[in-house]
Image (cartoon, rainbow, N blue to C red; front, side, top):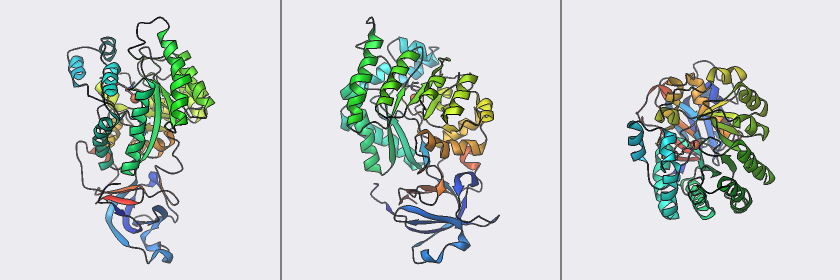
Length: 415
Ligand code: NIG
Ligand code: FE
């Protein structure tokens, strides 16, 4: 918990909630300001300021001053824990190299694997906490953190332990995802059957050990030409299923591998990237309740031009989340609001879609739909107050850090 945090218990009056992100106990008449009641770290009541139940009258009173109120942000896809950085690859790509060419030349994920393996757990923590602080300062209250830059049991464990520790130290909900199948580790590269041998190790050694240590909330695979095949992906999904762990997938980012259809068959929480998602993949995701996670930061950095099928996802009613995909290669981004802006500008999401994408639907992509991403009674008190006249300002400004008040896990951590 941050050192200057104080309890947020009390009645927070004179707020303007965003209708799509709020479930009021008493309907809010047009133009009337809302109140939120926090008690014991939980949101107990939401409704018109004039109708706060008398039972709460003795609680501390907070005046929101007409601020815009939204649920705490949820960043549902990050690779936050890693050593080093990859600015030199940025320069290579500016000189004309593609992401795949950089990876083939020994850069890419492999270069972050080297730096992550060399770093101690404490060093990784110190690097990751700076990144986390930037996200928290914008109002992130829940975050997914993947492994996948260790690619060996001890190093994957190191990453996941750092992720857990970040959650404990900062009082933020962290969901860990094991992404052992992110890339072929260098010691397997060039070996006949190396990819299959590594996947066997992921399934039979790494995943069971890390799950037994309580370090794995979900399992992910990078299913792509430059990573793992559909058959290898399915093996990892089967291993996850045997342990009762939910799956997610880096799917159809650079090509249509049929990953989304496979993931949906395993009841995946989400399919992420999905620039090359097919109509069949969309139908399968809809049927399975799988969330489409849009990652405009990676699309932008790679100067991709192949848009994800937004209109078709919308028409099919597949929930769309938006995330930073924070990672050192394709999305060194530490602003979820910037991603909301890019989701609107690059992907043509509406403002309510983008805002649900970084709250309600992002929570669903992590299996946190009952506790996060919506202002509603009975949930942990996670909310952000903004000095904005209208909700569209959240996605409209970029590169701007206006003052705000953050309540995270029932504590006022800023403001
Ligand atoms: O989500 N797509 C694969 N993984 C990351 C990139 C990882 C890297 O380049 O280090 C992503 O974009
Ligand atoms: Fe990713």
